[in-house]
Amino acid sequence: MFCSEAMKEYNKNHEFDYEQFFDFISNEGIYDSSYEKLAKPFLYMFSDYHRLVSNMKTIYTQMIEHELRKGRKTEKFEREIASDKFSRYENLVKYLDKLSIDYVVDIFSLNHDLLIENLPRTNWLQHEGISDGCHSYRSPYYGELECNGNKYDCRLEEYKAFYNTAIRLYKLDGSLDYLMFKRCGSNGCFRNDKMIKVPYGISVDKTKKQNKKRLDYIMDWIEYNYDFHQES
Image (cartoon, rainbow, N blue to C red):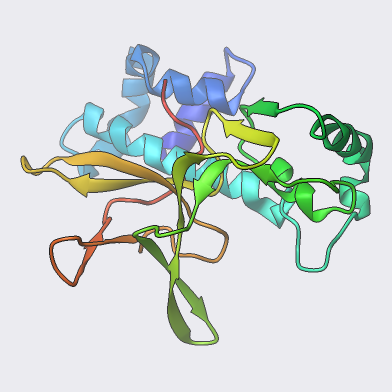
């Protein structure tokens, strides 16, 4: 509720942009007295205003993720090849396909959607696919897929800087299927371990990693949302 009220307050003096608002709540702007005043009815659940703001970023990220995924507009469904939804990109894909014959094509993207990843599933990319540096070969990371009441452990892709095609995708600001797996250090603090890909249908909060020291898994208990907005 505080997140919603803060968005309304911010919108009074700014043209709302979800990335700019994320930067706003990650810096000193959110500590303006007008926002602290708005927070008073919600502080009963938190020890102080700083704790409320820290939790707010997780909630806000979940809200934006829901909007970006609504209708799965940038994901292709099974057997959906070269549909009208992707027809506007036909010339672009064919151009990339032609370039890939003689050149390495590096694509740097700040978008979080899965449009580019799905372009190889059209009929227009004939020569090679698109690599994004991730691969599942010998990956120690797993996620849980629930289907028809049954649960399955599925091996997940991890970022290995593995680019084996001429067209290469670099997503500089995260993505809707990126997740930073975190491990607990010797001091009890969580630290970034590896960027992994968690596809649609896999539980984002049940990822785990093979334990090298014993026959067991290391769980990542603190993930709530995909890492589609990395803080700079």
